[in-house]
Image 1 (cartoon, rainbow over the protein chains, first blue to last red):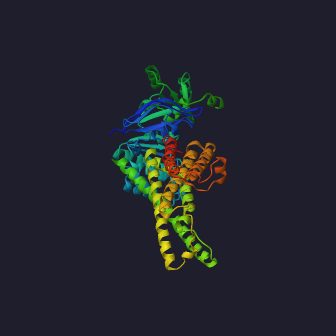
Image 2: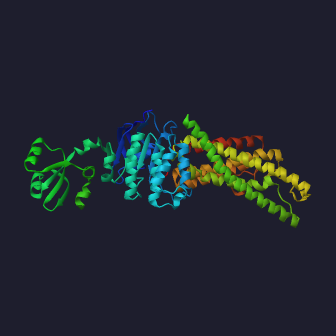
Image 3: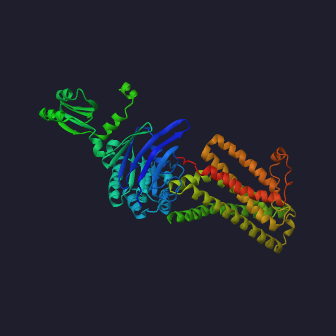
Length: 295
Length: 239
């Protein structure tokens, strides 16, 4: 079975609001995709369609060659993990693990137990009595241990503290190596997670801005570091993404590839050229006119 | 292969969960009924048999648990990869099994009650006349009870599904539809429950009861079932 995900001209409307507009993309099996976009860009709407939580207004979605909505050959193999509200969930953690194991075909209970130990999650506690961070840990445990061929994490780690998030990132990398799946990670913690992504999908106002490999995306801009005056002169006619200064040293991130002429010039002037961060690119590409006015 | 297994797992899980609640209900009604026997025998009053006594609480139980099905079960199971179709099938099967279980339990307990009360010479306190509010025999009352419990479950499910899919304001319309269906069903069976509505519809309660109306009452079940499927098949998960 190949659990490729294919979207063709997918749109979604809520009454008069268009949440998604003509999204087309192809996600290959076995890769980790980062889905990034600003608040309200349509990330959750898009992911909920893949999980068959709702139907698109128009366009087609295919997973493993079939339409996923209410399809018993596909739905058990797609896990959508989101920041779920557990305030009414009085069952114990172990019950939720057992329940998920019962319906998810590839669920690994032993791995779930190991993860619970790693996250220090008490199995005998009622879920609604756990802290927000522990509830998030439970979510990611269920998502990882399900080993679904299509696994979607939609900001499920929001309540986790930095050390817990680090454990999650490690487990994503290690378990993906053991059991490759099509993993889609939606986040606004771009700088923290960008190294996990093999490809990045960026959406803005319901439209897909780009889908590129992480490496290709990094080449969309460069950072130039050196003496402040030299850097200012060198980047005068370039599109700045971000600027950092420390003492007399300045680092400017610019959008666009550097011509061979400029690369030679930078070398002659002793300026250091490096990659640009995904976060800076994201901020630049999704910048609104209002943002300019307020900055 | 795995999805077929998921369907049967779902039926088992939903039946066990709702069956546990039904056992609680039955236990509470039995305790209450024994108390009623004691009180009635003290004051020389008469008491309906257990089937009649438990009929109203059982209908209410079926209605109430079904109202919460969409909110408490549908979303949970879709999140676990169950389809709406599988959920719909499992809920339908569970409704029939629960109705059959409650009717059989009430019937058996009524038989035991008659035997025990005869031995204890308490048969004089047993009310003669109607069973479950109808002028029918026990043999006829059992299937009537069974079909009515299914109907109340379906009406509750219809109301819950309407609220779940369309929100609060249109949901109120589904309450109205539920009341109307209850009235029509009761009239077809010959029950006298919603007098006001019966008068509004210019139908005398029980007046239409007969072979034709009973057939119509039974056929009302698949009709309501079909309406629920139309509501459920495209419903979005609330999250």
